[in-house]
Length: 276
Image (cartoon, helix red, strand yellow):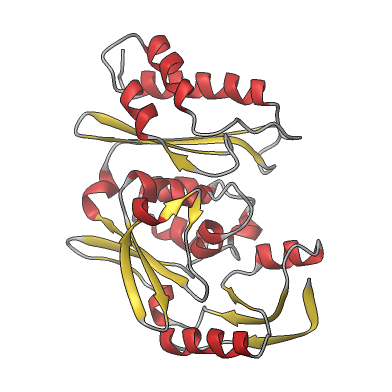
């Protein structure tokens, strides 16, 4: 749970934030990093988050970068989903961001908060998985850069005291053909049932999913099947055998219903992307 005497800190640099985390940990304050705070507050009310101190990252310049040059797009972890959607540097990312929660919530939810959160949907990561982006991770030793595919395994594998400062994406990916499809059980702002993102590069389709399993993922085995030169129905039938874990079965939808929705989404994407 969140302490009634919760301590709040707002460092102005990466070094200060990392050092502060270690200092608070030594004092047994159970610190956590904070950007948008929506999930921390939600889970805190349910006693699913335990902390005596929060470190707000929104005053760190590197976490607020939103720049595109000739080679890279840099997207800071403390940018809100509304800000990302507004600039629209990466249309697939904008599409994913625009479908998270409702507009009021997106004004607070940050990119880092969505990707590093405990709620398993984390839809904002899908475009970066498809674009082989690089993540920038900070701790007391500075900032290091890693291919996202090497450090995202069901979740972003952050070590104790580390935090995400931003994500870099090759500009080549920003203008590629894409599809983003989100299905909900009901209404336009309820929890998602299933989200699929697709990017087409050099004639090959890449796929990433959220809401199908208890974690977002990109499956190379599924992609291989979905890019084979066979009938679409057979592609889909083969691909679903490579879903990496049991399909979710919860109040939003049964596993059988999710599987039905997945099949139809994949067929829709293949047709729309011009596959036979």
